[in-house]
Amino acid sequence: MRVLAMVVRIIRQFFRDKRTLALMIVAPMFVLLLMDLVFNGEEYKPAIAVSDNVPEAVVDKLKEAGANVNELSAKQAQKQLDGQDIDAWLDMGGSAPHLTLEGSDPTANQAVMAAVQQAFQSMAPKPPFQLKTTYWHGSSDMASFDYFGPVLIGFFIFFFVFLIAGVSFLRERTNGTLERLMATPLRRWEMVAGYMVGFGLFTTIQASLISWFAIDVLDMMMEGSFGYVLLITFLLAMTALALGMLLSAFANNELQMMQFIPLVVVPQVFFSGLFNLDTMEEWLRSLSVVMPLNYGADALRDIMVRGEGWSAIAVDVYVLLGFTLLFMVLNVVTLKKYRKL
Image (cartoon, rainbow, N blue to C red; front, top):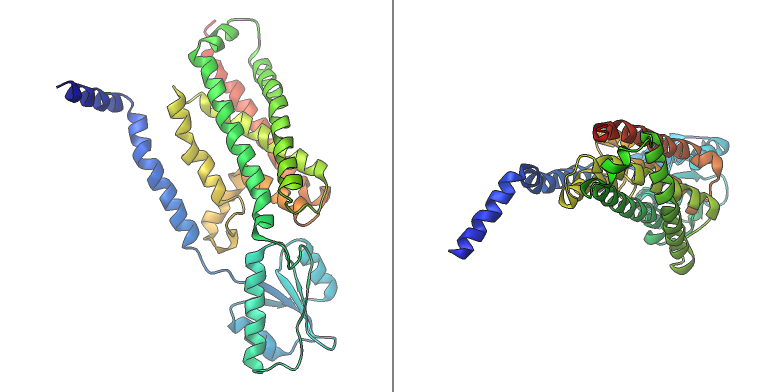
């Protein structure tokens, strides 16, 4: 009977917290739905540019191999390789065909090489020439971890700051500290700003240590400026901090705060660059514009893998700054309901 009483108590507890009950069922199905949409996307089609000296027969074979092919001059190809608009450029002006790979994405590299080799092999069983390959970014020694590493740095910083900030701010409310603070002349924006600066000091240290550990200890590829890496990780941490504070206003306890992880953090993983966005449906791909981690990971990859500078990451910096300011303003508005006096 005592066991039965315990069972009844647990059941009543769940029914009193209908939100937990609903999320326990809905959240896993939501994540599975996302995985289905992401992994059942289209097959990746490499974008290969060719010079005007590539025979039409080779172009036709590349298209038959599944590549998107267009003709570009050397100057145009360099510009598009810089912008990651094409995966490779094929030139047949010298004694041997010369393939320039964009190089920063191992998946795209493999797709390009497969298409080019298939095209040449179908024309002649034993080609009389050796294909010369160079890398615009990266190298043939580049490991998959070098490509995914920048995304993982951004993800772990975002995840832990979001979680710790959300739970900490929630405790301010559940312990009554928030109400006492709101009863003082302290303005709402001052409270949000103070929390951002105070907590931001520790997130800066955390972001710096994680970046240093990944680059210097784990020997992750690092072609650009370490200062830019610190800037992006700091902005990602501040965005996560402001978002965690905001969402904590809609949670009544730590368990409900955790429930935001599969709804807010996990979807960002799918749009962060760990998986190729080009293989997703267009409507699904468009969701990436509201994912802060997408901009952080893109900037980190530009710096660490491609060795790019400010011109390449400026947009990502402004967007992350915009997300942080937006969440801070929403935090100020949300705090209004806690000012009883």
